[in-house]
Image (cartoon, rainbow, N blue to C red):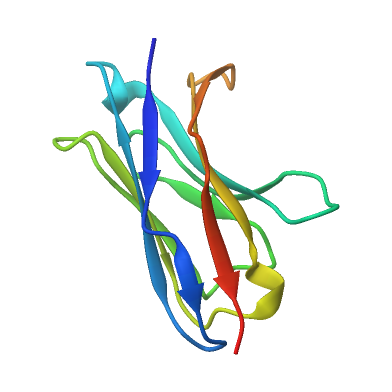
Length: 117
């Protein structure tokens, strides 16, 4: 069982930046497909960014050019660097681990990101 613990959320002004981290337990991290999802109040959870074990990544259109997902397999950690944050980015951000075939393995508890002046 993989356990995921997110950190780094908080309150930021529009145009600001935040970096989220997700630490994973276990020895299988480098083989896992890691992703960040978010869920805003009253909306469905949506995929923000995803990264494969070898580093290939993809992004939701709404965050392309502003967010960067990365991973450090030696530290069992995945990151989400968020720049030029806007109020629409306000949500609970969740870390997710899946197998290379896309089967969900684990979710983190979520971390709140609030973009407001």
